[in-house]
Picture 1 (cartoon, rainbow, N blue to C red):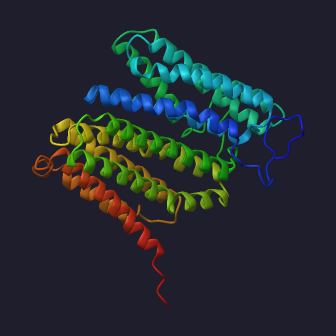
Picture 2: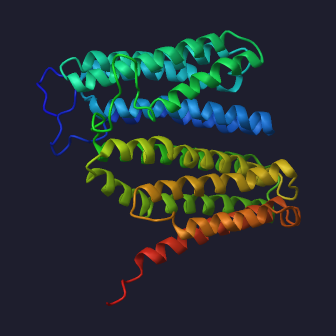
Picture 3: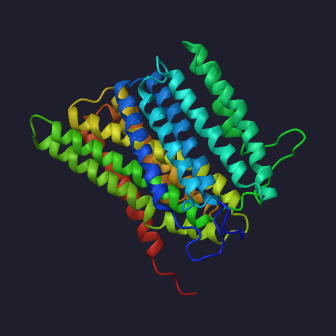
Length: 395
């Protein structure tokens, strides 16, 4: 895509055309706060209802962030109107993040209004910015219609009470999740194609990798803050702290050692980068981020209560690594020429499933179970690293 100097769109094909701008990194700081709010909300409401609410809010946070990353894939962050738009999104994002703990209580309207403003406002700005690009403009016309419909549902739910909020918000979220699968089909306007989503793969892969770093960084912050607040430090607390740190390193290794770079190479050289971006980066990163957040919560539980693991604690300790392995397995599966997901990840999931068996799970303390799940993650990371670095056999 080649644009004039007055255009707000990136100029494709240059050396720095897909570079992530400093303003994009600044924008991401709001989502450090959002991830922290999500983990604290889950920890404060550690039951099935709390997990459901936190999972739903994570979807909303991810969806508003990934849609913005798609938009900044086309927009030039060095242009002042684009920067101002991102600053406006940051302000709304702070309101969104601040209202997360009480989004299903008295701050539902604030959450819904901030969310709807971000989704609709950003898309309307993109529609204006793409006025000289017919294909891109038509694509965002369809997107704006879908998001406008969902915005009505979000706002109606925000001003509702009790279960009525779910009745509006679930369809709203479903519309936004399903619409890319339906190529944003609109009567009279038809549908988009993945060819219309001619994204810069280098930019989008880097943006998603940075979000993973944000989530991992929040996990380390939670671990450090919890460890600093422990009044009596003993062997159990030291082991729990070490296990949490090694677990975070293992998660980083599983994603970044080879997976992120291979996926980056695949989307950059793809004939249909939009399709790769939709599946690998838009959808399959959700369980990756969810796994990191749940792992952060489990690390805090193990640090504070290393000797006791009830059913909820066991579920949290095992669910975090499982979600992360499911997400990274799917991510690597669609970004490589694999018949099945990586065997190392499948083996790790099998081991976690074995640990979830009641006869095993209740035989261990929270610390022991945490150490075992960390060992599983280290095993997966080591297995994949050795397998990918093994010299090819001579023919």
